[in-house]
Image (cartoon, rainbow, N blue to C red; front, side, top):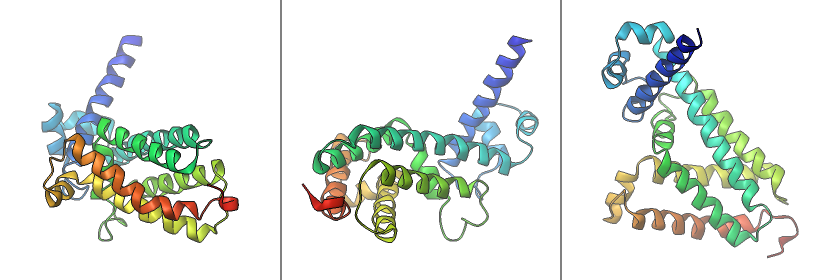
Length: 211
């Protein structure tokens, strides 16, 4: 019985892994169960056994990648909260880049499925939005800000927009810079750019304004 449960868990994970690969290349609306079956080398009917619809499977993928992203961001915030702003923010960006390089599909899937045209039809879309808001709340709870919630939202939404673009479509961004999207040079550029743009704005959000 235990072996059967283990086999079922492994099969389900194999299907999820195949789905993650496909959804990182195709949006929810463009991908199909048949593509996922081909990618995973599993029968179409077996996928239907574990996930009755494509929507159920995508929601499971969204749950998985959002949990990973939230955990990575949470650990980064906790790591830097006692540091000075310049070093802390620099390390926070570094940790998100490291996470992206370890799990590059996360930001790709988010970016592919958060467009204005598809966000209302994508299952699990609320998981994406809730995760972004949860990360923001984690920052606000761990760090002392003097700014309004509106100002905090403006900063974090702007930061996330660039972060998702740079890490979700590195081929496009790196092409404009004549850099290899898989190179250390590209990710060093991403890090320095995000720090240079957002650190001055971040300074204003801290209570007391001390350096």
